[in-house]
Amino acid sequence: MSNLANQLVIAEREEVARAIRLLLAAPLISARSAPETFDLVRRRRDPVEKWFDYYCGWSLVVEPRLGYARLAKVRLATDPTRPARRHRASRAPFDRRRYTLMCVVAAELLAIPVTTIGLLADRVVQACAVDPAVPRFDTSSRAERMAFVDALRLLESFGAVEVVDGATDAYVDSAAAKVLYRVDATLLMRLPAAPVGASQVAVPADEVPLRFPELLTRLSRERRYGDTDDEVSDVRRNLRLRHSVFRRLVEDPVVHRDELTPAELAYLESPTGGQLLRRAADQAGFLVEERAEGFMLVDPDGLATDSRFPDDSSNAKVAALLLLDGIASASGPVAVEQLRGEADALLSRFPKWAKGYRDENGPGRLVTDALDVLVAFGLVRVSGGVVRARPAAARYAVTRTSADDVEDEP
Image (cartoon, rainbow, N blue to C red):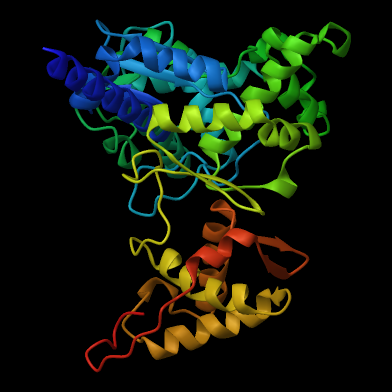
């Protein structure tokens, strides 16, 4: 009996750790799209919710009857490496227009549990017309209809909108397309992760670009840490330090010491901080790597991330790995122009590879995309036309092999 109890405890620990890492990769889990993952999170809800609240200060909402789990990640820093992307073959990031339309569409959907794409478009037209800060929505323009469809399809992927009949893409070719939707208003309300609503920090539209950092800070303000510096006690200060440190550790691929504030670094290097780091990692199934240059939480199963490196899933990631070898082995910074020459040599050496980069600007675009990958994984810094390797880049030294039958792929 004792052996059975031990096995049950071990099984529960493994399931809790798995649920934590799956939520880090996908903070919105639907019973419709991922039934096994949702069932795991639902069953282990209490310990998972406590882990996120204690270490990261993030709230987890699980709605068994509505069929979704939502982890609200709050961070003050913006992350340009994770834009919303269009659900098309190109996976191009959202532009300003698509973000605007997504917000307007979501606001209009809150009032209508069932609608058609034509009626929804009419509501968006009216909403844009009465707001001087929002450009008018023109349903006669194919480009506008495509942006509208991209916004809708993103909401569909979240499960906030369900297609009952028809296909959303049909609206791109014709404004007369017939598509029927069912709306989950509760889930729509859960999508924003900011602790403060945008309506509470309203400022004149023409001041938004100038005051964006201030607005971001106000949207991300968490009352648990105190509203002003005078209200921050030692307990609240330690709480904020713990949450800020662990948010970085679980979200960023690597955390270099020189990227931490003196207070954050002191917290991690303290006996209490080190003990909490090891305990949090053990409960979530991570391995801790602590080196002279920084810290890393390694997931042996690769569950806690939506993107991997090294990875041959895209030409940009392959090029990133090959270019990184030269960047990391260089005695100093490497010019972006020099990397373009290396990319051109790669394209010449492998004529059947990376067909999307075969035009005149192909080598430059390949370098840009590869550097975006390296920056996203914390491996390089790009500034003033030069690239500098970060300490973590040493992990990815390339092993060179030669074989007669490997000619088409790098």
